[in-house]
Length: 253
Image 1 (tube, rainbow, N blue to C red):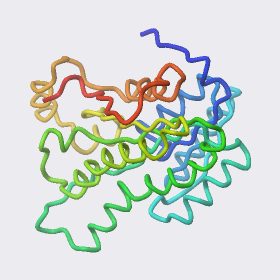
Image 2: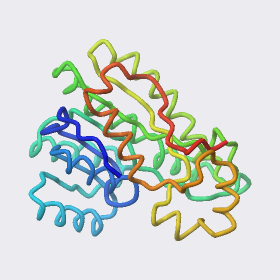
Image 3: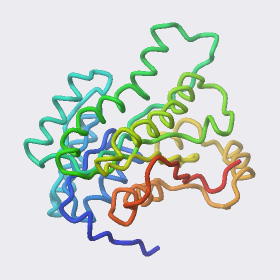
Image 4: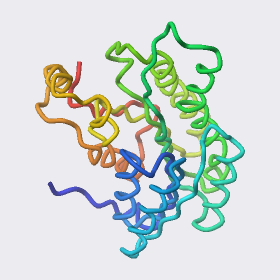
């Protein structure tokens, strides 16, 4: 396929959470290919460093910081390191999450809090960290990752779906609070995306067959298509897009 190039992303400073693998990795690659300055954080030090070395060989500007996003002080420190090298973020992509399966009967208060910290809390504080610089710049784009799992009434991971449903409310509230500064805040809503993790853990032939019956389109979703939507929302082409959901789920019902 032939994809678009966005001149407004050339030289733009982009921060991405969960950038070492999966959808996050594809976004790091996609922004780097646009000529953006890409800073990304992930708990996977080995994977993040490997990707950074590869992209550096292609004369792209990338910086990786190891970070456990459940540690908000660690998140702020990692973003501070990115800022000192790359500059203040013009784009923030809140991507990091883990859709670990769990039964509602087994959830303890401690597990609940850990899942919320993994899938929601860091997004709020990432926005809080970068927003002052975006306000000073008079513009910015913040892209939060939701999920269509709760739209589809998916079971087997109720704390995850609770967190992902909350992302949509957070997006709309921040869009109102920051919109006067020309900071746009949107939610990207993936369907079932064929990352290596999904293929390894849950994408059995029978599960895929059943899922495809629910999609309007007959093809499985590759991570690259999520990256392409994020590029659009980050670019000046999306200057009048905010407070909305952008579905990349192949018409799944």
